Length: 392
Image (tube, rainbow, N blue to C red):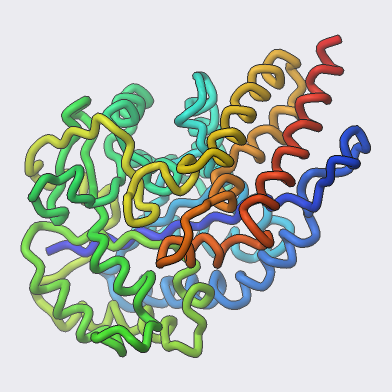
């Protein structure tokens, strides 16, 4: 059994307070200082200590492997707020045992707007990873693990050998996520799936004292993995799981450090990067006529496009994009792409109570989804006006 750990590194460019009265003022849409302050804090609590532990595991355990996806907006902020992280990741990638995964540069909803936006963002991200870390990925993930037949065809056309997806019952129809599959839309594209119960045991439940399995130790977790049938276990989660979503005081960083040692004591287990898992025998073809994701309990696009606020904002963003592209101004295009980042729509979630609502509230700094919507629409309106002025 191969353990395939994959961690996602992303920080958005959060919006500054942008009022209706600020239209035409020339004020920046994004609060640079606040974003960099947030990044520095997360770097101290999560990025540095967790990357350090992963690096030591690579040195101590020759069979240890993992994979990272890194957005362009994360790299932009790291260069300003914590530049030491860039060579740290470059060193890990140079070992060949820390694979990098391709995705959209802006962690955006580019896959839902007309071409050529998606292809351009993925290419921009590929170029960034090549120039910054010396790696050009062959496996692709979409924002929040979005996946569909259409996206698999896109991946194949772009030359990717595989994609990552959520091991969701709506995709598997009773099959196990613990195998390598292929896309029915393009069998050249291998599918590696997230085992969400085991991933969420760490990502969401690790510090939950009311959980029946609390506390989770590395030895217990390895026993669960070893008892799982199949060829691989995809443990996919946000990198900030380690030290940010679960503070160091919970023992999460110690858990991460102890895990490779616990796996080394279990002869039936080994590690693999996402690229190393691609040659495994295919367990069959999977169809995904509609888009799935790893977000919320429904695992669809509802986290970003599930209510009228979100749909209104997204439709306005698409229309603004047409104007921006016609205007031909690179600065306008960059601002528009930052506004297409999925996080802005995530903050507009109206889901009432429950686990999903709690996760959305955790990430949002707004007083309400309505505040997030109003602020976003003001910035988008200003962007549209700038594009119209360029077209006169």
